[in-house]
Length: 268
Image 1 (cartoon, rainbow, N blue to C red):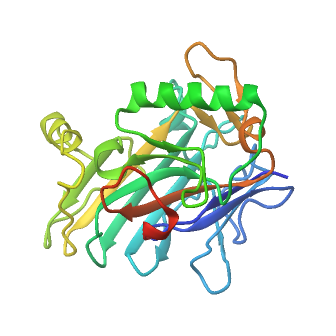
Image 2 (image 1 turned 180 degrees about the vertical axis):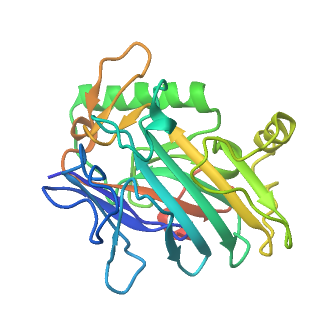
Image 3 (image 1 turned 120 degrees about the vertical axis):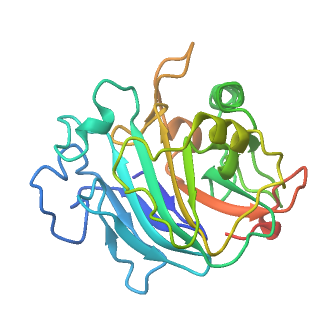
């Protein structure tokens, strides 16, 4: 059984590949689970581990010690989901997250997001070589990337700075109307995007009174098939190749600038 645990201080949940309903709550659309019968999202930040719907027709509320807001967790399916096919049709994107809310307190350092394993995994030479190739491609495609293969202090991970890497981010001051979630674009200008992406690590400014609306999408992870896809020069590779049946955490954490991301230094 493969696991994708979504666990972080800013947005929490757990995605488990098993035969089940994709949500613990009834949905308004009959096709919401089509193509996702083996995926489930659990909100680990809640007292009851409540279900969070994949491809929910409405934004899902969440709150923890660091952030309060709403999230869409969207996965491309076959056949297409009627509510969200407009975001995926004609595009190679397979996985899309949209978040809107407010930070409760400023982070201590740069916020990173990405994938992390709970422990080191013993894999063969080929799998480790493939992992190095994929991480190298991610550096070329996304820019700043922090990769570690795990040791006594550092968990295996491949993460990116959230502020500089998300595809779009709009910061709305108090009293103004933030953009609506569910749209393909939130209205960030090209100039604002270029300025944001050029921000040096550690130079980010987070305002706790502002509303942050951001989204990240990728064509490289097909969660419905649990496979890495569309990497130039590579055939599609099952995620189990890299970490067998270990849970993969989709994580966000802040950490002060250091060569390594030691687990003890992170604030999830």
